[in-house]
Image 1: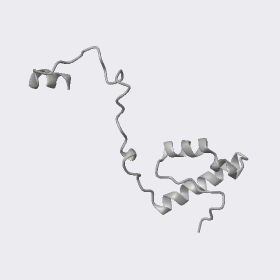
Image 2: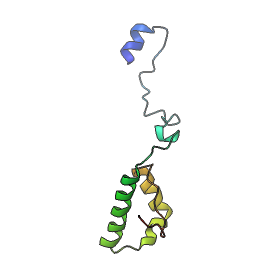
Image 3: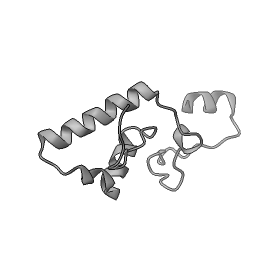
Image 4: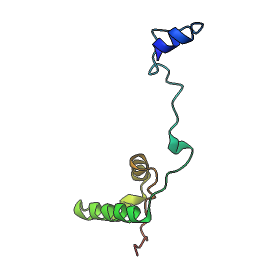
Length: 91
C-alpha cells in the first residue's frame, strides 16, 4: 500500500517510522460493535448443553455462569451467545 501511495498520490508524505501498531489511539472497530451477530436456536442449545456438561465434568457450580468474568469470556469467544441464567430450561 505504501508503494501505491508513493506512486499514485505523490503529494502525500509517508512517515516511514510510524506503523499502524504505534497508533494505539486509533483502534479499528469490529463489526460486532455495530450490530450483534445472530446465533441459531440450535447452535445456542448445543453451546448451552456443552456449558452444562463442562460444569458437570469439572465439578463446577452452575452459578459460575452468573459471574461477570465468565460472561465477558463467553462474549469474547462468541458475541452472539447469550449466557443462560440458572433457571433456563431447554425444550
